[in-house]
Length: 374
Image 1 (cartoon, rainbow, N blue to C red):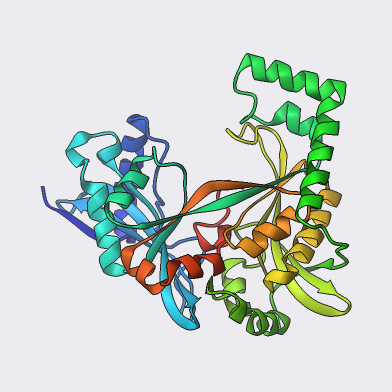
Image 2: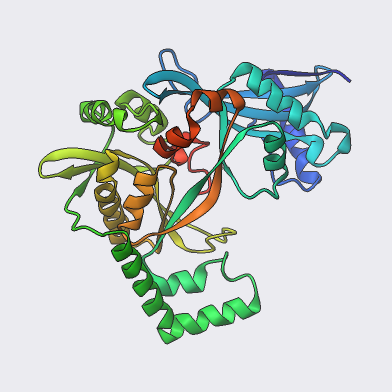
């Protein structure tokens, strides 16, 4: 039973469908892309960010596993390097012990193809993939999650993550209907804002259809302020966030006193029975760029835009301390160690000195698999 890892192709569509059916029948929530060309950032000549799909095929017939890679130009300590995010690996090892080692084999194959490899989004040490990466000497760097509650009543009543027991549901309902929850959350955001040294932010958000020369000028002005960051020039951002396609983001140019100081990609999503957010209307800041000193201005303008649209909460995943501070200055609860940035040994070497460079690392949802759950 020889297994080869090969690029996805049109003739493998039926085999991928059968793989997905076996995974579902075995109780796995995961499946893989049937179409070999990615809907999001397919490879194009001259493009510096794209996605590619690979299959683990047994005896040139059955698909037993799969993974996706997203190579992208990064600027690390002033040098451009191709750094790659990985999605997966998905394998029948999750439902059949005969393929229990296939996941590790696919990770090793990824490393051969793209040594500067990372993933961002794992939870705690109890996850098997985190334990495996630790044994493989990967860097595991914790990053925060930022949360702002715009509508306390709806947050308390509709947040599925908090309402998992009858006791919690009762307590949250009492807090919601009594008004105590509203007062507590408003007070919390005010205290967090003051503790972070809130300022009088004056920047405004202007909705734009695409990234233009202004975005290139901003990138050239900002890039030296980060030790490790994916290239965010106009061409890269128009590839990552194409008009009229996935992800369904709104592009905001952030202006202050007639000057472009940053931009943000935001989303406004009405959830339906989502396992964390329930039926909340979720606003999210899924990407952003500015001088770190101006992060608070960008967050303020993006938050104002989303709350005026009527979202219940605003969330964001961040890594850079300057951006975490910018969210805190706007009253966000910045919850530490909620997501792990996992970097291969080769990428860790490129990030040396890690203790310094990790403090200048800028990551958002667009650097990983995209805002898939938002």
